[in-house]
Length: 470
View (spheres, rainbow, N blue to C red):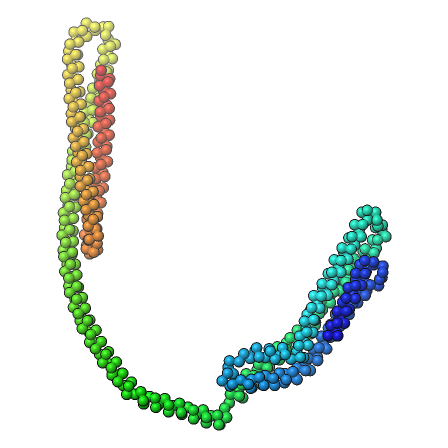
C-alpha cells in the first residue's frame, strides 16, 4: 500500500508540474527533460518491481502449494466418500486461492501493473493535446495584436516539441511494459499451481481415499450377504403368489388367443366371400367392356363407310362443278363473240342498214332464245346450289353424330380404362382409323369450300355476262 501511495503521489506531482509548464513555459525551463525522465523512470521502476514480485512469488510457490493442499485436504475430509464425485474441484481450488494472502497481494499488484501501459499512453496523449490547444490559443491571440508572434513563436514550437517528445516517451514506455513486464509469466505460474492442485486432488488424494481397508471390505461383504439373504427370503415368500399369478396370466392369454383365432376365422370367411363377390363383379365388368369395345368397333366401321360414301358424293359434286365451269366458260366465249359481232355490225351499220332492218326480227328472236337459255342455266345453278346446301347440312348432321359419339365415348372412358390397357393394340388401330376419318372430313370440308368458291365465281361471271348483254 505504501508503494501504491508513493506512485500516486508521483503522478499527482507530475501532473501539477505539467499544468504549470503549459501555463507559463518559462517558469520551469528544464521541465521537458524532467517529463521524459519521469516516464522512463516510471517504466523502469515498474519493470523492476514486477521482476522482484515474480522472483518472490516463485520462491513462495512451493510453500503456497503445500498450504493450499493442506487446506483442501481439511475441507474434503469433512465430506463423505460417496460424495467425492459430486465435488466441484475447480470451484473449491479457486476459492482457496482467492483466500490466500500471498496470492491476494499478487493480484493487486498485477492489476496495478496492467493499468500502467494505458496510463502512460493516456498521459502522453493528454500532454500532447493540451499543449497543442494552448499553443493554438496563443496563436489566436495574435489576431488582435495582443502578442508579438515573432517573440512567442520559439516558445510555442518548443512546447509543442516537448509535448510530442513526451508522448513518444509514454508510448515507448507503454509498449515496453506490455511486452516485457513479467505479469504474463506470473499468470502462467498461477495456472500451473491450479493444475497441480487439481492433479493432487484427483490422482493422489481421492485415489488413496477410495481404497478400502480390510475391515471395510469385510463390512461391505457382510452387508452384501445380508441384502442377498433378504432378497432370497422375499423371493421365497412371494414365489407361490407369483406362480399363481403366472398361471392366471397364462390361462387368460390362452382364452384371448382362442377368441382371437375364432374372430380371425370369421373375418377370413367374410373376406373370402367379399373377394368372390368382387371377382364376379370384375368378370361382369370385363364382359360389359368387351361388348362395349365390339359396339365401338361397329360404330367405327359405320363411320368409315359413311366417310367413303361422303367421299363418293364429293367426287360427284366435283365432277359436276367442273362441268358447270366448262358451261360458264362456253357462255363467256359466246358473250365475247356476240360483243365482237355487235361491234362489227355497228361499224357497217351505215352500209347494211337495209339488211339489218330485215334481220331485226330474227335477231330479236335469237336474243329471246338466248335469254331463255340464260334463265334456264341460272335456274339450274340455283338448284345445284340448293343441293350443295343440302349436302352441307348432311355434313353438319354427320359432324353432330360424330361429336355425340365422341362425347358418349368420353363418358365411358373411366369404365374401360383397365380393358383399354389390355387391348392397347386394338384401340390404337381404331384411334388411327378415327384420325384418318377426321382427316378425310377435313379434306372434304376443304373441297366443299373450294366448290362454293367456284360457284361464287361462276355466279359472278353469269351476272357480269347478263350486265354486258343487257
